[in-house]
Structure formats: C-alpha cells, structure tokens
Length: 140
Image (cartoon, rainbow, N blue to C red; front, side, top):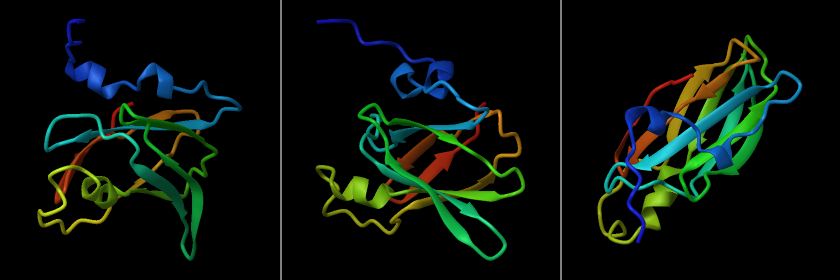
C-alpha cells in the first residue's frame, strides 16, 4: 500500500498534469479544481459551462466536466473587453452523492462572473463547494 501524497497549499492551486493543456495560438487557458467541502475529496465529473457575456448577449463558449480528480482545463479565445460567466452544476453533483439525497439543498449551481483581460494568460479558479455554499479564488 503506497503512502498517501501530502498536499501543500501550493499543490492544491496548480492544475494536475493530466488536465494541463499546452496553449496554442496565444489563447488563454482557463483551469479549475473542484473540491468537495463536505468530505475533502476531489469533486469529479462535475458539469461546467463558460458563457461570454456582452451588453445584450450571452453566448456559450464551452461545456465540459471535471475529470475524476476534480480538475478541468480549456483553451479560450478571449475577447478582452467581454465578461465571462462560469457555471458549475454543483446541485447535480451533490444530489448524486451518497448521504446527500435526504439533506436540504437550496443551491443548484455556482455562477462566477469574471474578466480575462490578458488573452495570453492562464486563469485558475479553484472552488471548494458544499450543498449550500462555496468558496472560490483566483490563482495565476
């Protein structure tokens, strides 16, 4: 039996090698790591979508899901003056978890609005989530 890997704060902020993609054509890289705040595990297979928000429009950029280790990475051809909305389907994730079916859950999804002003940058937004709350931050 192998010894469990110790996680430092820094290792939790860096994308896992399997989720990291090399950037092509000077595209931004959006990454995240979803963690289950109720038991401390990785939140795998969570559906996620990114929308570009304009003054009078909302356009789908991608739909994806986190890998088994809770991570995802997508290259984005960003518009520097646009806003973006990351939608994480946390409700469906927790409804499918053992022991969560009978507990009260009022949050269906996590919605984070942000900008990506530098099209050549990596944007990493980790999220710790539970059935009725979440915490996120930005890490480059």
